[in-house]
Image (tube, rainbow, N blue to C red; front, side, top):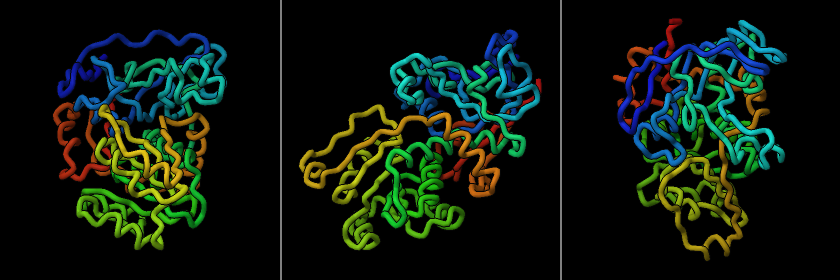
Length: 342
């Protein structure tokens, strides 16, 4: 069967690989129908993702159908539509035993450390499948990117009425925005790209946006927060420059969460952090329970995924189309790939 492989940065190729073997105990074989393209895929393509290994079959935001199950599998059955939790952890690792499989020492993320879903069929531990009888395959492919935001917001636990700044309105930033909105916090979004801020206002219902790069960011933020600056700042840019500067926007007693990833050093003067007694947090991947929560929220209509998908393509056109997704001027928020049946 055909698969798309990222051989090295900036170079995809179409390869032939064997179909997966029959599932063993606690495993399932799934057919991939929809793939979401996210910031990790773009960073891997550009050579800016620190955890990426090459050559690699990308794809970790997946809407799949179960086609076979091994013995002992009870959470899914043949024919189920599922979202895939792409974080292949060692259940016996220190982090996993502490309830944090998202940052397991032995973690293998589909499409990053191990081959992902840009192929028609593959085998996966059945515990990593999250079924829904109501959601479309496209909606299921969006669950993982929403899970990143869900986990990041849980890390800092905004309270109703608290001022929260989200820096970066790309796909990861948008997933953060969705879950900040659910907390009842006062949401502010900052980005350098005016069209993204317009999308946040018009399609995501964000009242307050700040144009980054005009030199007035801190002044604008103080006007929006009664002068004290946000007590939670979540940086979803993956830019070392933005991440290094983000402390300037955190108010006294505040928290700064890094959900974006950079290969560069992040640096800042310590006195500011110490004087304001800030808390610095990292947020990596998501937890299994986040997937179930998100599926329930989409099923209930609390989260509407329709504004997210701005571009669609099919498996055969992806290699040619992919470079355009790296360019903000194309207006890409989320691209979805349709995988053929054969």
